[in-house]
Each structure stands twice: as C-alpha cells, then as structure tokens.
Length: 522
Image (tube, rainbow, N blue to C red; front, side):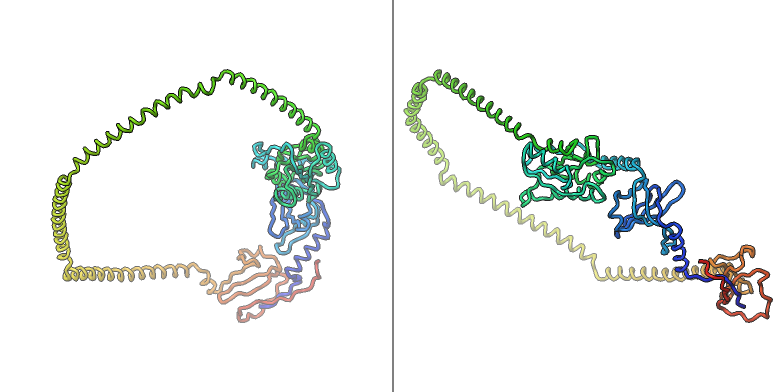
C-alpha cells in the first residue's frame, strides 16, 4: 500500500500532559475558591485529598502534609470554606486539581454550623452527660493549670489562689490560640492525668483549663474533638474557664464544672483560708462547750443511778445461799448416779454370755454358707448360657459361608464396573457429538469465512468497526483486517486521493505515512 503524507504533528503522552499542565498554571496562577467540602480522604502519607463543590461542579483538591499540620481548622465534610492555592494538573490520571495552601471557613455562620454539628455528635456519644461529671475536691493539695505561661490569665489565677488559700500550683504551658492550641491543651490534660501519685512531681487533685476572652475563631481550639474527649476522659476533676461569662465552648460542656472567668475558677477551686479557719475555730468552741455539757449531764445521771442501787453484799447474798444449797446436795447426787450406772452395766453383762455369742456366730456362719452355694449355682448357669450363645454364633461364621459372601460381592462389583464403562463411553460420545455441532455453528457464524472470500473489516483508531464512510474524517487513522492479517491506513478526501496504481501483492504489516511539519501548536 502506498504511503499517505500527513501534516499532523506527533506528540508523546508526556509532552501533551506537561504542556497542558504549564498552560493551566500560567492561566490561573494563585486563586481563592469558595465551596462546600465533599469527599475527604486522609491516607497514611499525611496528605489530605478532598473535593470542593457547589450546586453544579466539583473541583478536586489536595493539601500536602506540611500544610495540613498547620491548618487553623481541620476540613470536615459539609463545611463551607474558602480555599487558597493554585490550579494544576495531575498527569498520572489526566485530571486537574487545586493544591491548597490555606483553608478558612466562609464566615462565622459556617463555624457556628460546624460547632452545632460537632456538639450534636459528641452529645450523642454521651460526653456531656451529667452522670459523667465528678465532684470537685473541697480542699485540693495540688492544682494543675493548663494555660499560656505568659498571659494575664495565669497571673490572675495565681494571685487569687495566693489571696484565698496558698497551695502548690503546677502550670502546663500551652498555646491557647492557633492551629496547634487544641492538640497542646489535650496533651496537657492527658499529661496531668498520666502523672504518678507517688512520683517526684505530685499529681494534681484538680485541673483548671483557662484562657481569656476572644472571638469564636480565637477560641476555636477549645471546640476541637481532641480537647473535648480529653476533658471528658480526665480522671482528675476539671474546671473549664475559657473566655468571658458569655463565651461558650465545647470544653465547657464536657468539663466537670464551668467557671465564668479564670479568676472565678480560682475562687471555685479553693476556699478563703481566713474564713475556713474562723469556721473551724467556731466549731471547735461549740464542740468543747457541748462536750462539757455532755460530761456534766452524764456525771449527774450516774450519781443519781448509783444512789438507787442496793449494796454489793445484798446483791450477792441470794446467789451465795443457792450455791451452798447446791453444794450440799451434790454428794448425794453423785452416789445415786453411780449406783444407777452400776445396775445398768450388770444387766447388760447378763445378756452378753459366751453361750449367746457362740450361738450367734454359728447362725451367721450357716447363712454365709447358704449364700455362697446360691452364688456358685448362679455362676454355673450364667456360664452355660453364654457358652450356648457363643456356639450358635460360631456355627454361622464358617469358612464356606464367608467364601460364599465374598463370591457374591465380587460378582456384584463386576456388574457395576461393566455398567460404569458403558455409561462412560455413552457420555463421551454424546459430548463429542455436541462439541462437533457447536464447532460447526461457530464456523457458520464467524466473520472469518467472509474475510476469506475477499472482504475486509475497517476499524477506527479506538478499535470500533467503521459502518459508514461519512463517519470517517480525512486524516483518521484506520486499521483494515484481512483474512491473513491487518494493515494500518489513513483516510483521505477524494481530492487528495492518489491515482490508482497497479495492484501489488498483499502483505501483512503496517503502511507508513510521511508527516508534513505544520509547526508546534504549543
């Protein structure tokens, strides 16, 4: 077949893919996209893959691991956000996507919706249930505070505790604002709980998680699930003092007690030492006066009761008289008891004479001999019956009978083997006839016989058969299947078709075309 010239430029797959990638990045550059978060995937690599969508379209996005660890909010499905990044392509899958460098909620309304959804989810798990909450210790020895070590909050708490009741305070320094604040606060609560009560650092009896006031974005770290779960799982009673009295976060619902301010948390945690000492002194005075009155009353009652009691000698006179009477009658009782027992022993010895014992022994010996005779006769009868039964069984187990049964079994097995051979040959014959019929049907329906009569099948570049000439454009790559092989060809218009030449012998192979350079479109 003659070669058909073509002016279509050839590109490799990588050249086309990376040319499209450069075009996309140069056209759009750095963009901000607003949409709702759809599918979110977090593989083990640490990257985050997600979908940004609106009511008509979906845009794939990726957040690399280094950026994902610094996000102020973690992406959640259904949250409306504004994503900042650049549009690029992924040549490995022939798709375009957005590489996101920053992610922020689309207004306070989106944060409130996310907060409400998270609140319902955690409440359904029972993290806010009242039965989970612990009672605060009335007078803790050590208080642990999770807050920023440089802010005014810790100074207010320490000052208030020092004024009311100075005691040991441990501070776990954390960031109370920013992308890592939630994780640091949760680690602080877990760290205090993990302390050994007998270790070098004392384990707190009470925890305070504190922060000053701020906007919902500033306090968002205290709404994260890790913080709420750490507060709910804390074995140490916990007071939440986040923001002002009007500020509410999810840790307030999971904590054992909520304070309106950090200073209020210190007032709730410890009593006033002076008031406590005054109350103890007052109760000590009341206790002493009550004890004095009690002792005086009991002394008066005891003196009145002792005056009404009889003298000790009068109390012992009657028991002493009964004792003397019993002692005098004891000797006579012993003599009478001894005579009674002697009489009983004499009566028993009369019944136990040697003649009586000999008679009883002789009778027992006769009974034993009779029982032995009956057992011997019974044993002989049982042995005879078993011998007769075994003789009957042995008569049926002769060698001639066993040989007869073996001969019958062999004849039956030979008949079954003959039937099996005939059935096998019949089935093989049937299946062979069925296979020959299917082969003839396949040959009659196959298009290979049609190709052998001089026809050909024309397919486009996707491998689909071409059914009409009008559907083939000029320059389309075609594949022509003949009876003995395939030939590659390019379709041409009537004006560009070469004059027919003397036909040559057909060869199986690929027809080459000479490309005409039209320049690089990119």
